[in-house]
Image (cartoon, rainbow, N blue to C red; front, top):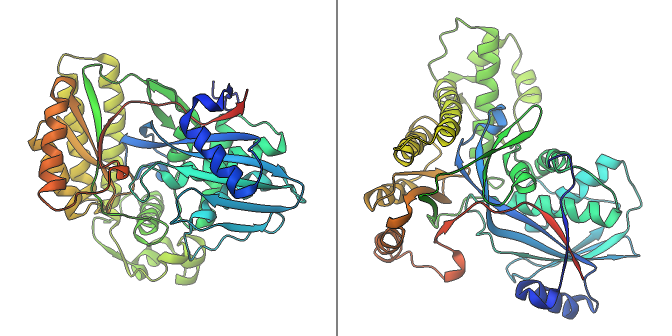
Length: 429
């Protein structure tokens, strides 16, 4: 239930190879053993791209890949953060003076977002410190929400250390808000599915108020994730925030001038004139810091995507509920339409994603689209279950081998996935 907090499971760590390995690395790093472990999953958004921050419903599911953190509360007021991946250096700071540098989306800043969100929610100071070891197997900058999973994991870690209670919905809302400390003006989809996911079902996530409804996916099909191998960190560029600002401006202009001729690219001066505000007011009240130098906004194209994509989400859910004979084909068509809109109206695709989508469709996907913020990252395809082995083999050869993009196995370049469960706490039995 969304009104309850994340579940707490008693486990025999020795029976879970990943937990056991994390415990051993933790011991060699900190000279002690973890008090508890927290897990938060990544997600794949099946349909509903770039519309959560406009308030519209989305349809994601959690994936099995996740962030896992081993935790030991300590008497000092110091946060000591380490990562099993040597690419991410150790970090420590005072728990009483959390500074998050928006100019550098470093890995530890995502942890600090979750920590600070819980700290501020309860209005706490003089927090105790903790030693934390992070282990993630979500491919980074791939559109599968590795960043938000770390924010959610850190929020649940902090809540657990404090011995406080919050519902899954409250946690999701706090973490969605606190991730903006990193500089991205995102919506709440990623954090919501990380906490509200349940094994075996996708979720329709609705906002204001936040709620999640089960969506039963077709039993004769599987969803396949393919990584384009083009990394896109949305906090490191302004692409993502520009789209958020364009949607905000479009909404304000529509509200103010329902008869406005707004199907053109609007310059800043025109936006100000239509809204009856000064350029300074626009910059301080609407634009984010990294979008203040944008001179033109494609409001019509962005709004057209948002409204059509919001309708596709509801249509997708309706088809899943009614389960017609051609259900997989119909869902696939909606996913294809979504990709075209993301590519042409929202301009958040890239040549590699478009090529990968084409390859997936060529080798039997009923539908395929980019997933996540775009400009790189992954595609998601719906494939008939009996076609899966040949689909995986053909796509692997056509995209990864022939193009010279063959990557180490840990990149999880191409894999079938099914709906996984949400965030939880492990205690050693």
